[in-house]
Amino acid sequence: MVQNQKGALSISALTKTKFKMSLSSILSADAIDNAIKDCQAPDSFCPKKFFQICGLSKKSPAEVKKAFAIMDNDASGFIEEEELKFFLQRFSPGARVLTAAETKNFLSAADDDSDGKIGADEFQSLVLA
Image (cartoon, rainbow, N blue to C red; front, side, top):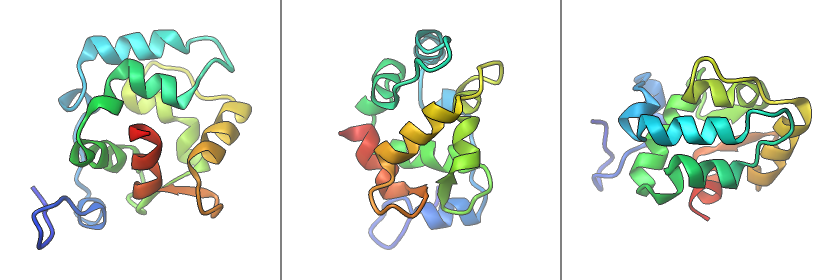
């Protein structure tokens, strides 16, 4: 496990070492399935509702950071718009791609500093709000 001097997980260290694991190591398979089923229809995805149903909103900040590192596919330290399109597929490979409207809405809900991408702290704030 990668930790900083205070013993907390460091996103930059996680992404630099390409720390990857399955989201099913953090969330139950049933909870993931229920969350994916809830937003099967195009334009039905709501990030906050999704995080509640899959159980991520009830996880610790360290677990949310682990989930962020998994979703940061290019290990840039950010989830960019292109990665957001495939957000559901990071939870379940057969899930649908987010629509353009869902992707924009998700980005605007989390991108507090308006830089066009979601950082670890922004993601954590959205998930745990």
